[in-house]
Length: 265
Figure 1 (cartoon, one colour):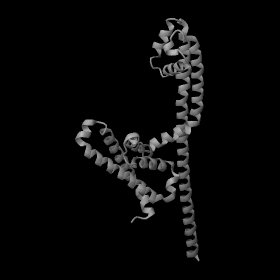
Figure 2 (cartoon, rainbow, N blue to C red; figure 1 turned 60 degrees about the vertical axis):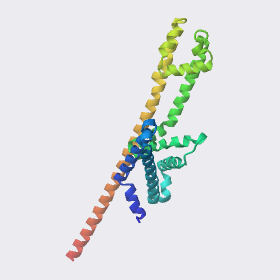
Figure 3 (cartoon, rainbow, N blue to C red; figure 1 turned 90 degrees about the vertical axis):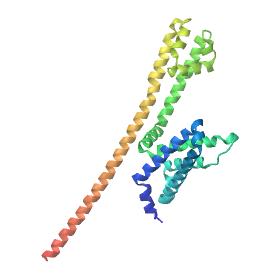
């Protein structure tokens, strides 16, 4: 029976993380294969066995990590994420309204986010950027609403299928903002109102080229800040290790001087 320290050495070992990553990838392939009726008919039993083995591996992994870290296991939000995902997939398969629980097994693939450090950094950066993104989302919603009201009043009679009421205008302008077939909408309106291009071009410049790019800017800034913090933390750890080595060297020098003094006496 391994001690807590021994378990910690095992779960923190690079090979352990690689094994879990491999299990997640294999499970992702089997879950995708189960969506094919042909593969399910031919290899259904084998796919089911692999799925059960993968789930058992995830349960064992969580138990090992909990045994290694004890109560501190739940101090890491990623451990909570892994636990919730595995618990959801442990729920018995049901029928009817609860048959969706079986489909939720694919959530196990999301554990790659917690296993792969680079993915964890990206998700952490996105979570850090949420407050800034919320402000940009509010600004985008305000621009969309104002533009929809204007478009309904200007183009409601010209293109009622697109701008007949506020709801239609909101949906149409959201589609225009994504760049999906916006020229078709604009050209249909311009047949009756030739200067309508001014509205559409101005709206695209404000939303697609300005506001939406702010999302990218906020996300990139958050990732850069996180990388800077990680580098600073790494530098602090290296500095602490260096200071510890220097302190040890000073202690050794003092011991050598003391031994020399005794030898001279």
